[in-house]
Length: 388
Ligand code: FES
Ligand SMILES: [Fe+2]
Image (cartoon, rainbow, N blue to C red; front, side):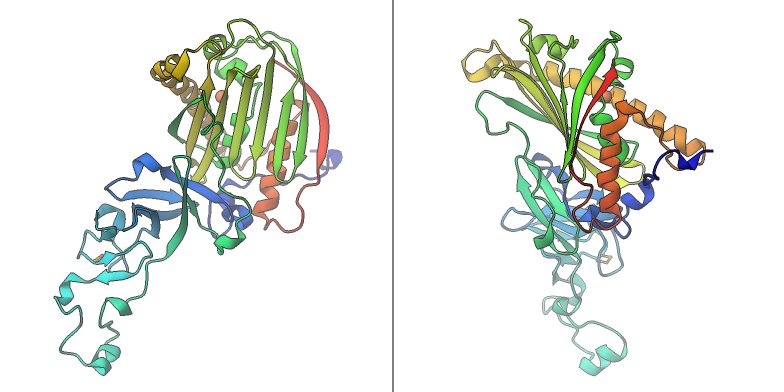
């Protein structure tokens, strides 16, 4: 083994990066907890960075996020019910509001107060007297934006390192946008690399998205402020499937892939001002080998009628198509997972020029995992070439 060949690179540690206690500054960001449309009358159970949460809407209709654990005997609150903007535990019915404060303990009767023991008697036996005394279920800041509910698990929400990611084109006229939620059997670093990765498309999505032509693709990889922007110099990409739909007349294509720390990718395929699609993927870490990916697909057709009725009408077909393609990524992410877990080794990557953007992503996420102090990886701008 020749360790001196390259300067040492940080190894990706999926265990640490998905653990709230060990993920360093990776927790100081907003993560998607659910779609707005998922948060209706019933409580939702979600796990972010290994932390079990219950999500529901408070009395004002705002999203609330609490640790999914009742103060009483620690039952899972997400198995309970919501009413009047509060959540009731399924075991003995303790009720909590959106801030995690206990507002009702049914077994204390209408007075909501222990009646026969005096204060000294309660204290001596280690008992609380009333709902106001039991403390609060830990709560987490939430934000609702662009049809998504975000949760912040860091120590201080005023210190969040970024605002929640804005869904591309969501408010631009002429664009149709829909969401997909997909469970992936792999960790965040591997997933954002996959979503930014062009070379795999000619293998994993052969016949569905892009076919192999054995030709070079020059690109620029710019790393700056926790972002990695890849601009491809590839004006005519013979995309199959949706690509043909979007570009029947063969306009020159602008293709960029953009990573935003710590967990978001945005892929743009644009043909002139009138046509294109933009895919954003926000990865929420559940555990080391489990993630929920919130994908937005925004698209605009070059030949649509007023009210973009054709684009809207095509949504079902688009959803079906994108579900197939994402399913191929789920499968390959499982295959990668099996590769390193069955060998009982951590991730040990070998990279070439075609992987420069991935090395940049690993650099940024590694820096955050180690605490994210200082300015982070220095800005860099490089030209590369790979073949597809
Ligand atoms: S465990 Fe929740 S009310 Fe008893
Ligand atoms: Fe893919």
